[in-house]
Length: 378
Image (cartoon, rainbow, N blue to C red; front, side, top):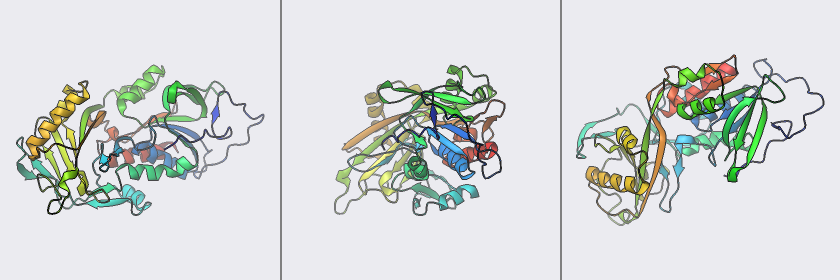
């Protein structure tokens, strides 16, 4: 997705833009409060849920995303043989507000047949049935990223999503001492300052959020709260076996579509081609265990890939050479110690934070966190 044009001066002020001679009276939001302009850092599930809610309440938002499009850890990676859900594998729906939000994009989310996730022992034998049949497993189609990008599309069209833009510093507005401005870095090292924000909301993993606050030299109660959160890394392996699709053979190895594993290297396996709306080419996504990922976090990618392919063969019995192999490292993948509440908001400074790490590690946790931060500040 190409980067949208910068917002016009009346919508988003950079420091090199002349301010109008006389500012008009601030319009009212739907709540009756003065309309505010929020900067949101991060365009994953939490950030987009937060932005959508604030826009619906009549406020202005500008979302900053370092990647080329929205999605965060719902990232879908394309290959010549079909797509892979490199991050979040599926989601469940327990909060009625999440269910209503999904209803706004009919046809995007579909039930996945892997309602009973198998639990494997270290040798790949089925040890027990995992999650119960009564809880549906949902995926977005044609890839997990589709739900977030669909929700983000109105922001893109309105010029409110700044992609390929990494925020490097948060500081007080040089014109309005009560407001905020952001220093950013774009492609090829280009730098800009965006100003005119009433509040800044960090929709990032807790560690980079804490680092940004620290490097910005900000004094806020968010710092101590963020330090209590722990998030484990994850190496993800993606494999394709197009030679499995031929008359009389559509799959290789096990006849289940998803499993949790107790193998010391592997925690999760999913047959991507079993998900609705995907290519039928046999494809697998394998997520390494948190402990093994942490131990090998800085290893060479090729070495990690070779070790995980070997472990995949041990667990599934699939020893054929894949036609395609790719890996992705997530430094902040799964919350191991959550914050314990849905969001952080420091009203005295106008700084807030949200993310799945507030409540857990489920995709729905990210949605609820972003939603409730928006409701708290709107």
